[in-house]
Length: 165
Image (cartoon, rainbow, N blue to C red; front, top):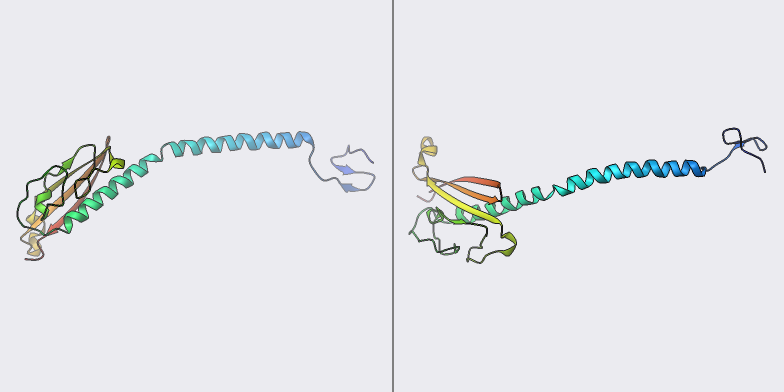
């Protein structure tokens, strides 16, 4: 057996020894631990604020669902008085004007959706034929669906024309 005093070379055999010393191993563990701690700190900061995009996507989904429901209704018809959260009785787009909920969202039949308890929604349907006057459109309405959660607000706007007339 030979003693290694010349930078890892075994003078008796003329070849370099393999492996790491205990000091090198401890230093490597310390360096990797410090780097990993920094990465995990950055990761935890990102994860802590990742609920925001989920809320925004949920507000978008609520607005799109309600906007699609409104857009599929006929342009005009008999006026139905709003009855709480129930929308299944609405038979044209103007019936949705003024529809609003506060800290709850309902399905079309008026059932509150428990998982959406802190969301609010409001709808405005405003006649707006001037926007399309150059295209000879005589009946058009601007539909605005506003969804809010705490201090965050999301607006979805669409125009609906009376294409059937």
